[in-house]
Image 1 (cartoon, rainbow, N blue to C red):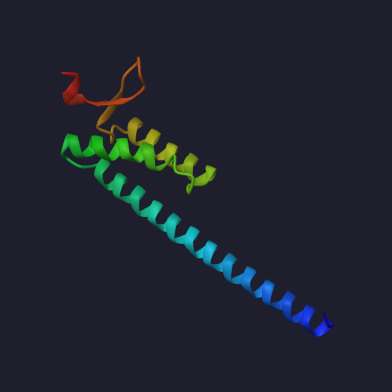
Image 2 (cartoon, rainbow, N blue to C red):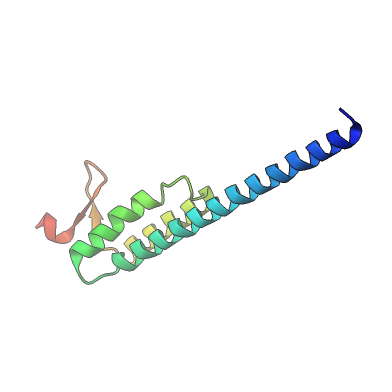
Length: 109
């Protein structure tokens, strides 16, 4: 195979690799954007006046922050948000001693 054919082959392979990397990066960025939208949705529901809606927001929040799309730094930030909400009594969910899962104040009565 002549040298020019090798150069063409190498350039073609690098071009395809670049396209694949671009598609992968775009897919990951889109998935991360969706994860952020889900987290925003959850946080908006945690401050609802409706206790059931607030409970749903907190339950889904704990699921969404464990996504592989969320970085460790972001996860630490989300844990701080939850702890702040609990300390300021913004959270409508209290922890139970035995399971560590949340129950609404209404359910505990």
